[in-house]
Image (spheres, rainbow, N blue to C red):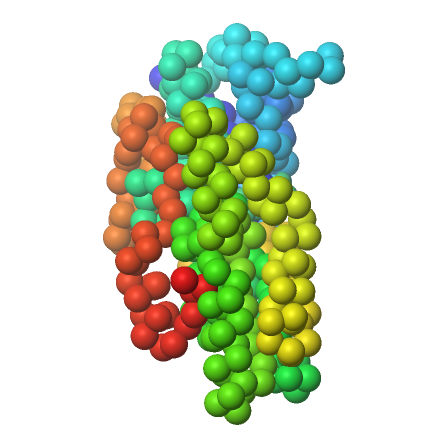
Length: 364
Ligand code: F6P
């Protein structure tokens, strides 16, 4: 009997999503399965808004950024309906059945993995792919979107170098990554940032200022500071840890330190550095630029590898897993081992060690 696959993209959009949809779809059709898309993540599945994918829709999307299906951050168990959050899992299960699905493929990051596990627990066959520019999904070597964002952030640092150098300034460049420092770390290393601040290594602003002043004394009166959006000072870190010790949940604990939630945190860091070093400081927030546009060759390859592997697993009847990138290949990993397990940068990671070897300051 022909198998029917549903597919959706959830969470923040990311380069490589369309390449992954194409990978799943083309392989599914090749294996004589039927595929249909759902629009705007779990909301589209709840509202049964479908998008045909078995015509020409899979052609000419390999190089497109964003997602042809649309996305949202909606969760099946907490969806805004009639102005209040409601558990819509039952409706989703009903729509899955109404569409005669044998499996639902969910493309997304950490939140999507958790939502997919909830649907697995509700009795659905699900397979997920790891997508995010943050590279913070557990149990996979990497995620698609990361390589493209890394290239964009690195190019930004390259460009900021020439202006920082010309004006003898500090440029603080804020890089995305949520609570993980992979993107700032990678782009900081590749772009030769003088300081890299990541959430995993709380920083002391005086240590950063000292490093910048040392560079000035050595004839380099300019510095690039690559700061991850989730980076925290030692004091902020202490406040969060104290709140966690009191039994507060991570989100509430983060709110204990207003610096973490206010968008001007990076601007404040630049002001502090300007005051401490007597060098002019400027801020660049890369923001959503890092998520937009054409996926890199590496991301197109990764998305195709993971997407086609997902279709093969479904064809073989293996469900309830995320297709992880493992070396040159792929590996199915039970969703229970992935959901709720963010992959953050180990402080002794080889990337950190090599950055330190070339003199990068981490603010510690
Ligand atoms: O998870 C991807 C990401 O770009 C994070 O790096 C960032 O913190 C977040 O999404 C931004 O979310 P939004 O697009 O909803 O503002």
